Length: 233
Image 1 (cartoon, rainbow, N blue to C red):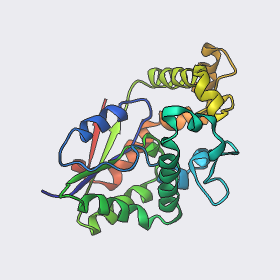
Image 2 (cartoon, one colour):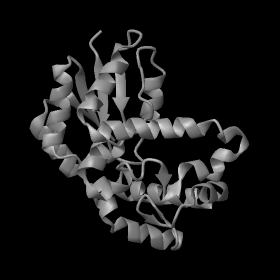
Image 3 (cartoon, rainbow, N blue to C red):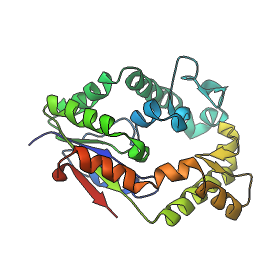
Image 4 (cartoon, rainbow, N blue to C red):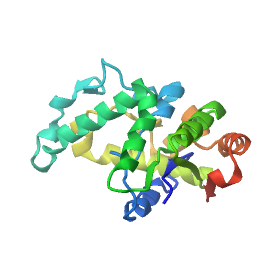
């Protein structure tokens, strides 16, 4: 069976978790270390700088040492600390040398006869044509068929879902204290009321990028064959 990788082309709060569960249920799938790798969006777009690791922030979260995060010192969460740090090291390695991104997924597809893997990072909706072409062509060189998936939903519903998720995180007192998060969660200002936060977020650059379906469709359509990308609504 031909080796395949499925890459998300957007958008957040539009079913990427459901897609990952479908892929993970397949015997032929070898998933990445984490569903959303955040490689290309972090490197390419300044709006996602908080996802870009460097030598200074690789071992911190919101300026706080990962080792000091209270959540990781509590019972069942203790075992997650090393895994969390390991995931960040992998992502840092791929961001620092983009060639390693392709090598990483080639490695996943070489293990145990697996034929499918994925990177379902919704924020890839911001990718420029040149980046899409590069991803597609580099995998092609490795004899890996690259398919892009654009999963979209009504922009108003998407924004509302994003805001509600941010407030849910804020209201989880244990997580809020553990991670010492500020009021800005994924571009949502949780210091405001739910309604005011929704209207503010809907006017933000973050929401505009994640709802710009025409931009990513034009980029996919102009540089890929029709059978190389799929639109799910």
